[in-house]
Image: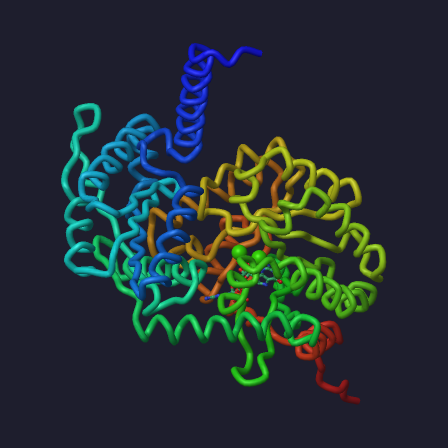
Length: 460
Ligand code: C2E
Ligand code: CA
Ligand code: CA
């Protein structure tokens, strides 16, 4: 081992080299490749550091979350390369806008963030909006991106980084629902909303084991005979204070909180128990259950469902599982596995909300899906708007030639029912026939319909 000045210099040089390399790797790991801004990981670290510093010297930190308003549309119409170029250009503009000490990050997709001090918040937010509204030339085409901004401030609004981000997101969401191209700052109104939501979240967690979520039923009608041939199972939450809540008030929240699986399971078990006697007595043939796309992401979903069904008295051939087209498109391979596994046991799979997405009937040809539910948005205009009527009629025609059964949803008027029947729609469902109802009411209705109509007593 030599300790000559020469080798020490070499060593020092090597250490410096390694340091620089480490620095570079670190930088690379923290940088978003497309825009050169810091990425989500580095953003989180930066936010924590700034909040800690603010704690030490009684300072404050403002978090701006920035989101483009119609990026998906731009991306779809101009192509991914153009979309990328747009994002890179916006990243540059945001960087130019930063003041010393600010941190600008790309959080992912078309979402950016600015961490800055608590000064001139409105002025700065408005500048960001103007900046995002400047026209840009991408591959010779002029586009005007436009975006929205949500702001929350530490410690005024939130005491930790989780709440700070949640509140900035809530403000952003409000700016978007107000039409976009604007900013919104977290305030008392949003604080109330967040508290209400927190409470409802806690209540929902308790509601499932407490049995407050119950199945309701809506009849499915045979178009030709007008008879009830099945029921769709729809979840309701019997909230102790707020009364009966529809799925819109709790299903999206349950999906976000990861509770939807437990809800669907509870509804499924209760519904099977209620409906098995109806099927056994020949009152209905079909029990149709909704499952969330979240459930379907679980590769074991179909196996678990088959297992749960086996513990009930409901025959597999009476069960229909309703899945949405969005899930089909999300993960075609997994969807196929589930559908084939269910079909192999005689369980029917129906495609729900058809007509709201890509509505590709041909895609069905390669899957064992024999039932499609036409969405209410299409049925609304049937018989009223000539183009929609024509579209629905041709969908019905195509479905028939593919051997697919169509159920029309949301039939509210007799005119719709008549049109659909004439166009060859097999089954219908909607307020015109019956609204969703609790199990007891459904059972009574089915048994009444089953007993022969009261006739005049024979005379003589
Ligand atoms: P969906 O599967 O499309 O269910 C049909 C919805 O349309 C039901 O709303 C039903 O009450 C309503 N509806 C039926 N006929 C008519 C009509 O003639 N006019 C109008 N305006 N509406 C009609 P609901 O019960 O509020 O359910 C909303 C959505 O919540 C369902 O849409 C379904 O996607 C979801 N959902 C319901 N129950 C469950 C469940 O147990 N699990 C999961 N994951 N989702 C569920
Ligand atoms: Ca459904
Ligand atoms: Ca539907």
